[in-house]
Length: 72
Image 1 (cartoon, rainbow, N blue to C red):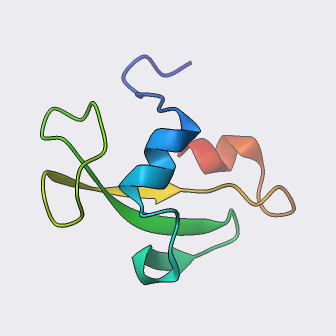
Image 2 (tube, rainbow, N blue to C red; image 1 turned 60 degrees about the horizontal axis):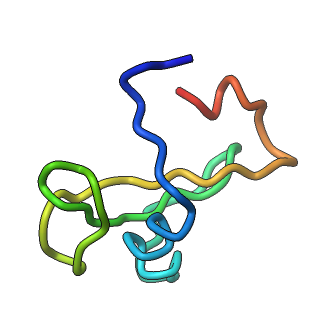
């Protein structure tokens, strides 16, 4: 697969995006929704909103585009 892609536990993604709150929603597309989240500067763990590294968390809509397109 992609060796440079870090995988996070779902709980970390929930914490980083404030439980996927509507206020964190950046947009929607054929694959699902994209949420704004925050991680430590080294990218290892979620932090309080507005601190650390700002990231986009992509969710997959199983009825949308395929898995390969989602990975991009």
